[in-house]
Image: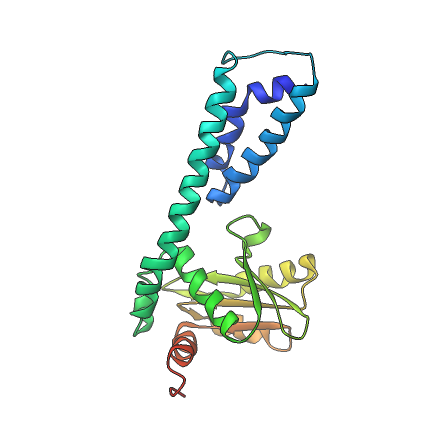
Length: 215
């Protein structure tokens, strides 16, 4: 079974390409799993089937892993450079729309970190569209969805978020958008552990953490 599984590693490693949300972390997780499979094969005599002859298959597998780690390092350097420059130049709500989705998430994460909370970015790995997981100073767990939209977020999206809140066991949920919320969405969220932050309010918060003198 394991030899056959490893024989299909090129196909399995490409699986995230067909997922709704894909990130480099998806490929790394699969590569890590296949690495454990390959190590376990050292203790088995069953060669199984092989589409790529050994040792070429294993060599190519480790080359693919090395390439993934190089991409990760490159992305982290880019996040620390270009993205800080782009978010620093935000002066209006429309400027949010020039950010890539992951840049927008990083910006929101910085806001929560500035409040003293611990923030984890899911990197597309979480179910139901949760982008950030926040552990507050008081020990609560919050989930956050980030929607860099130009239009309005409606009641259906807020209902979905409320369902995710209960499914995840979190204490609170927030939906942060560069756009706005419909009146129905705002009314439905009242009295529930939900925070809705629209573009204008987000801009005020962002200015506040970058310029404490801004009220």
